[in-house]
Picture 1 (cartoon, helix red, strand yellow):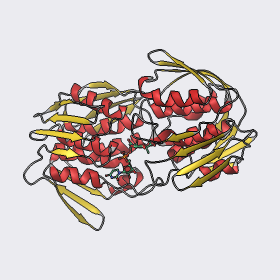
Picture 2 (cartoon, helix red, strand yellow; picture 1 turned 45 degrees about the vertical axis):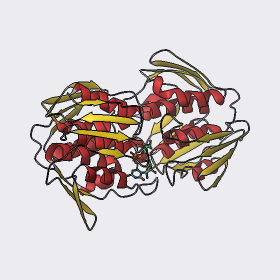
Picture 3 (tube, protein in one colour; picture 1 turned 90 degrees about the vertical axis):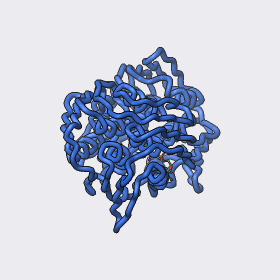
Picture 4 (cartoon, helix red, strand yellow; picture 1 turned 180 degrees about the horizontal axis):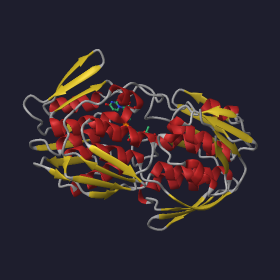
Length: 417
Ligand code: EPZ
């Protein structure tokens, strides 16, 4: 089992380039299945979740080749519309292939995605929407069989909650469906805008992405294109948090500054200084760090749930008391126990965490419990005194492309063993 050995307290200095966004690459890889001809996706991060997505495409009959952060997909020979059970369990977000398989073949067989470490991950909003689009869904001992006996057609769909995955899945099913689909209360995340721009480049007819209402006119066919995946805003937030925690001044190149407004504002509240040009962020850690009285995770453009754990890791050493309310996921405070073991003073009551800043954290043996919780422990270890040994790296490798190489280039003392 691999682990990170981190000796904290080293200031971070220098420039790093931000990786492509996992949460944009996954729906775009799924969308590639809808296209005739070849897709070339550039700036694709090399992550276990991306490899799993390529395996699903291959098992469906696509040709999928990844090298040096570029993925080539040919989907002319899609013959199978089944998502392998093993991959459904390995990567919960495999549900994003349902919409594209329905759009391409009209059928899909998949296992009910298990919950994950963040809590139950229901897909009721996805399934309700597909039923309105003419999909018949049978469930038999955990296996869903989806068919479209009268073809896939557009529908008016109001989402009870602006679900990112449901919004993306509906878009993937709608672009080749008969007629018009209108999604109201759609999610507004930047990754949805990236997916829409990719689909439009392939010939899709849609508008409104980034707002709460997306309108899609089905077209006859989509043609593969070359597309560059947007930068990962949560990975960007992670490196900012690492610099805030360890101290220092870093520059992030090829960052997407527009989608980071809400996050940069929180770091400025913590007394860090952030300035940015169009795609470069200059960042200096706050001395001392200031507590943030109240933070609440919300759908975009609110403060993102994916940045909650990594910001909490920084607040552990801020002057004063901070309160974070997690409103998106049931169980997204699993990193708190390990932070407390490193000397943090945090109380969790229900969906709120109260963080009393302490002078220092000390290194400890800790385990990652989920992707962003693991990133939070990495951030805390970089700013702690002494040695932190971080295990269960498979969680981190789902979303971060060679993090130790990147952090070492900034002066961090971190080794993967
Ligand atoms: C996406 O997950 C992201 N994953 C998550 O990032 C992110 O945390 C989340 O959006 C919120 O921004 C990918 O894009 C691959 P949701 P998704 O559907 O689509 C409930 C990371 O760290 N819900 O917006 O699954 C659900 O239970 C990952 O990179 C239903 O009730 O998020 C949750 O409480 C973690 N019924 C809330 O909505 C449904 O049918 C948000 O879920 C669907 C969702």
